[in-house]
Amino acid sequence: MLVSRNIIFAALVVASNAFAPSPKYSSSGSKFSTLQMSSGEYDFDVAVIGCGVGGHGAALHSRAQSLKTAVFAGGDVGGTCVNRGCVPSKALLAASGRVREMRDAHHLKDLGIEVEGEVKFDREGIAAHAKNLANRVKGNLEASLVGLGVDVIEGRGILTGNPHEIKDSVTGKVYTAKDIILAPGSIPFVPPGVEVDEKTVYTSDGALELQSVPEWVAIIGSGYIGLEFSDVYTALGSEVTFIEALDELMPTFDREIAKLAERLLIRDRPIDYRTGVFASEVTPGIPGEKPVTIKMIDAKTKEHVETIEVDAAMVATGRVPATKDMGLEDMGIETNRGFVAVNEKMQVLTKAEDGEIIPNVWCIGDANGKMMLAHAASAQGISVIENICGREHVVDHDAVPAACFTHPEISMVGPTEEQARERAEKEGWELGKSQGNFRANSKALAEGEGNGIAKVLFNKDTGKVVAVHIIGIHAADLIQECANAVAAGTTVQELSMMVHTHPTLSEVMDEAFKGAVGMSSH
Image (cartoon, rainbow, N blue to C red; front, side):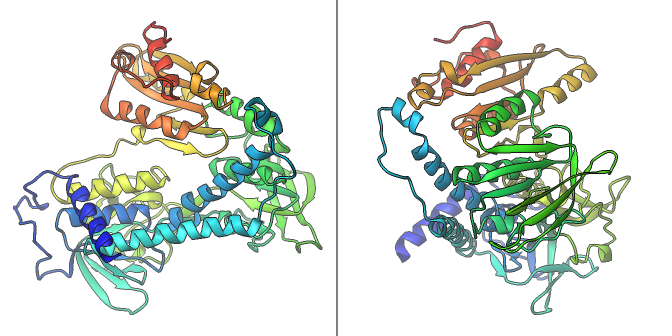
């Protein structure tokens, strides 16, 4: 076991060093050796407050540049993504997805399969699968930090108000670092009037524990989180009611994709919805004895419109930065709803409008609000280290993909079609659009999964890909090719001539790329 672990750590060192060229330079431009540690002036070269995916990515890249690095974990190695978000939710979706597939007699019959008897599941077993996966990934993250020589400090890091200083919330000890990276992550947002007990009325934190499978659950909010949990609950036998404050479901999604998603993920399932209403008052119940009461008011007039009683309610109304009590005010940092203002290099500003740069303080991930995704936070963390080392770098957020892991999946990179048309009109170029279809794809048909489309938006003048939106089987995997194309400035002309493996789902993208230049795919 020790030998294999050492091999893993060695591989991590090699992989991390691959990010940056050699020789390496500090922010002052002076060359330093690969064995350099912090000068006597500071305890650390880089201190990261927060140990989610963003903080972890920054710490690993910092060590790859031979910078002496500390992470203030706050007792939460892995952060939201690993412990209460992306990772355990995927475990619930995987397990519930299997249940959905095995209960779909019509689909199985088309494949020549028949399941005799009732398909059952163990709720506690599914919950344990999610918890065990989270613990396993958390352990791997912590081991990688230790293996690469990162000092993991258990307390939460708090700014003292003095430059370069961070206080450990547990011991009270004050450490110094040349550069400080704020990566505190976020927590679920609970609207006023909503009382959460994490048993009958819960956020995503409580939902991931799967303490029960309610007969009827209301989900407040129809974004990524709400959609994914509707997928889990309906697969396990629940009825779902969405409560959405805006006039349309999935308000942040591309409209064409949202309409198709409504047909595939909502209409064909035991789901109904209310739009244009606020859940103004939500009162917890008692499992098996007393229902949860939800009072709704019109989002515009604020007049009462309806009261419903359900078995449980999930609050999926977004997230807010976990920046409270970090000592930001003592550093002259003014937040807006908890968000820390940064420039394109992730340098912290005193305020959003006309703010001044606070030297050697950076902020990544959910706390800066630029893009609340784990992999975006990691990209920002790596970018910060590049800038600290004197290699100017800016993250192109238009090239960062996103995905919703429903069945079928939804994925996207770049602006929605509505946003892209607005951008094209403003900047004076013509928007092109091409589409690939899963119903024409051999692999999708072999799986009995012909529903879905892939939409490519491109600049007709330059041929460059502007955005891609996909709904269909394994859409989350298909989007990466598209994100790479956006990042690299690849044109649809170039993509149309690239060979895609047959028969694979990637040919859905091939059809869309070829269609953009007037070609046909076979």
